[in-house]
Amino acid sequence: MAECLPVMIQGTHSDAGKSILVTALCRIYADEGYRTAPFKSQNMALNSYITTDGKEIGRAQGVQAEAAGIPATTWMNPILIKPSGDRNSQIVVHGKPFKNMKAGEYREDFYKKGLKLIEESYNRLAAEFERIVIEGAGSPAEINLNDRELVNMSVAKMAKAPVVLVGDIDKGGVFASLAGTLQLLESEDRNRVIGVIINKFRGDRELLEPGLDWFETYTGLPVLGVIPHIPNLNIEAEDSLALEHQTVAGEVDKEIDIAVICYPRVSNFTDADPLMKELDCQVRFVRTVNDLGKPDLVILPGSKNTLSDMQWLQTAGMAEQVKLLAETACVIGICGGYQMLGRQLEDPEEVESSSKRISGLGLIKEMSTVLLTSKKTVLSRGKARYGNHNLPVSGYEIHMGISSYESKENSFFIELDSGEKDGYISPDGRLIGTYFHGIFENDQFRSILINELRQSKGLPPLYSRPAYNQIKEEAFSRLAGTVKNHLNMELLEEEIRKYQMKVRGRAGK
Image (cartoon, rainbow, N blue to C red):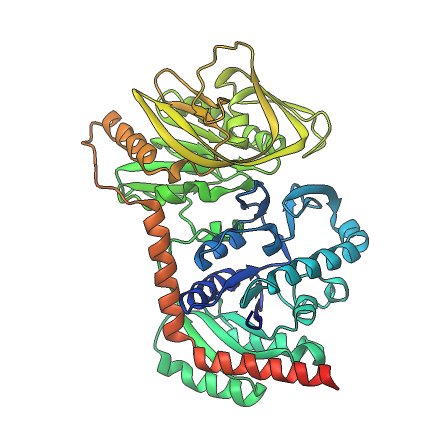
């Protein structure tokens, strides 16, 4: 087998565009015929992805694997951290919950175990793939954390990978952030950096040239590319930082108004992404009752701390307003949002929070939910009952609770291929609860749902709607094409190989 050539993408800060650039390189290398895989040793995110064998990894690595044209595995993200509170997180190891830990406990007690997991995972990938595109996290210049970090320069050292540093010019101060990050690195780590990328550029490249020349002279490092801002890129976001760029309020300028409740511990909010691609739908992420308005559809998404977020709904006045809206609007709860629709939620083992019991919205009066210590993570298929339709649907489940009904004759929403029943749908179809993440990715269901909303407003149906998988594929191609046109791939390849020769030379001494 050909040698494995890794490259690592690190950033000057979170949301610099590391995940997107890794996605782009995965598609570029795959298109060039290389067996390519993504890798992120440790990911902190509430948006997760289910592998074909029913394991949970960071959503970004799942999307990157899709871009590379391969199935995602837990070797690509062996450690996933899912915050459940300000200081507590669930640690997921190779796709299964390991333990709930505080930050200090994780840093002190998990470090050696983490290093071993990471090295084992990387070596498995390196034995199978020709190119590995590694993603860092945050910044490598977090000097208060660098003695025991598991995701930046320690991984570059382990993998013998050259590092490309990315700065986001859209936030301003890009030269200062790049140069400052380099200056704060230890000399050994500084020598791993083979070049930089300036990301999210808007404007005239000629006006930037003096800065590029200065930077290369000052640091001795090449600017490998200036990547333009890519508007309306239809690629799923990794974490809640992306929500800052979403519409949260404002006038409705499309025919169907959709409000997604954005509680503090919202997870897998990308469930709403397919609705954002519909030309007649406006999707708003709502954080206050004043911004809720009178939408046609209210979505209660997943939550990493369902009881805490349910309490937030009550305190913020959102709960009463959602119950009022349920009289006129369609309300759909997904996973944690589905659990909130019921009469009561219990967490007797304090799986997610110190609260052991809280009242739900009571919209599904006969349902109550108990959180358990075991987590269900599975890809699922079945048929959804909606109106007179039995629609084939697929999705994935990630939850630690069981929802039960006082009556065995509840109006379930989906009959799984296994024969199990999932969720709830009201007789008029205006109230739906389900554990199915990805439900809106099913084109037929999404189309019928939106046309039902249109009909309720006296609007004619629209039958020409986008195919979501095609949108994703076009997005990967568009991203890869843009990055390839603005990144000096020949110079990047030259610097990667030069670094590998230097590393092998040191190893031979």
